[in-house]
View 1 (cartoon, rainbow, N blue to C red):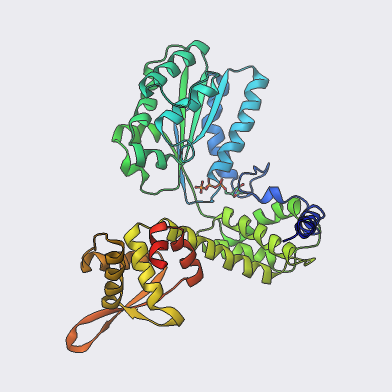
View 2: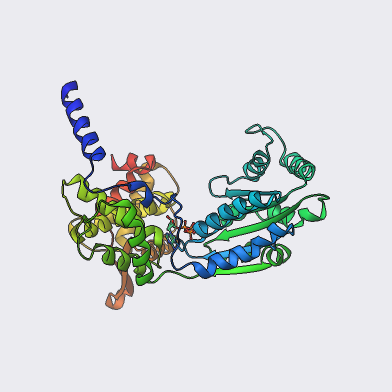
Length: 403
Ligand SMILES: Nc1ncnc2c1ncn2[C@@H]1O[C@H](COP(=O)(O)OP(=O)(O)OP(=O)(O)O)[C@@H](O)[C@H]1O
């Protein structure tokens, strides 16, 4: 390609984005944007605020445990409340330190402790100090400050599943070892079974106060989307039924506001790329399809190797919309493992992995009778073959057999 062509293309793209006829401010639809208003979360805001407001009187707030499915506004509510709370604390001259840590991003005990130290102004090298040492430094320096700390641990299940509840145990006991400071914990998770990972003492201490965030209904999502759409889109570009369709589709997916907002944003992006002056329900349908494909790619990428090889066998055997069955899949899978020179799982284990692929919605299976030869499962592909292929080929081992 000539450089001039490239310049033309980029100029065209930049021009289109900067002079968008669709978006006024696309960023307000991104997941990290924190709106000033959270419709249909008044009750949760009130509860979080009333627990944490004790800090303004100089008392240690009770620990708080928050549970709710993904996209139900847990992070947004807590962030909004702590933002206002720290403003109030400054206004009232109350010593309060609020630290927010996402333990999916800062997942190791080292990183969590390092972040806590950094937040009270102590620099920590990225590695090389024992975590026990970090913990005692934290206690020492926090106590020197004589302050109240609210420590929010978002997506706490990631940390606990990987590293156990040691750190959480220490943190729930920390006040017994502090003289002049106090720490309150706010744990957030979207995993219903999270507390089964916890020692009963940690569970009861973290859950001094508990709060559940219910999924949003389609009507509630509509209100949320309307508010954000006003800030995000140029007036009048949203076609009839766009918000309603986004809300209805996301309501079906466990009332997930993040998904609803993503859907609205991607619909706008598709409208923009296709040079349309309006966002229509057709753009929403295309955006939904694209999100579904992206979801499939992500699920496939995260499968273990043997599941990928089984799925790849199914992909080959169901070309052109055909169906296949367990015995045939097992033969193909055996060929692949032989070609790679790796162990072959038993037929029984492969049968289990096929059931898992079914549960993930990637394939569908139906048990049929083959007369005297017993039962077998008829297998067909349930998700987009291209998306499955794309997810599989990211794995170099699968790419090797795919030639
Ligand atoms: N009531 C609401 N009003 C406006 N926006 C909302 C509301 N609830 C959630 N959102 C938005 O939806 C997105 C997801 O919300 P949030 O991150 O708070 O969900 P979450 O429950 O913490 O999800 P996860 O468990 O996946 O972390 C964010 O962009 C947030 O601003």
